Image 1: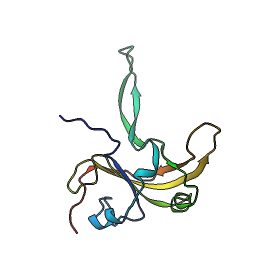
Image 2: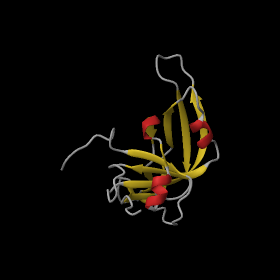
Image 3: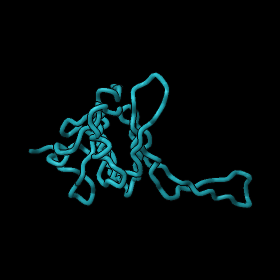
Length: 157
């Protein structure tokens, strides 16, 4: 099984709208999404976690667990801040609703591994530091519905 590096392969986009109730974008919706890949310094979350339920019983000192509710991990994208424009600050302002699309294996039509997260921007704030590093903005997202995971990148016009 060939291995790959996410850097240079994975694409991260933001779409304002996706018409499908299953969150599968059309090729046109994917083409119209803003590709933020080159501006992203860090990615956190964008995964589903299960809140397991402990089920102890009197017959054993071992505490078994069963699957419980699913929830999204705390999720954020850290961007490099632009010193001349405020595109990220305005396009991803607090309260903005849309879709973070992560094409894990690339944005090539028919590629597997596309995840679509319906989100609301929870915060958009500068990371102020005196360290010797590029200026950054962190955008935190609330995942507002169950995401579409491991879909196929759409083909078509």
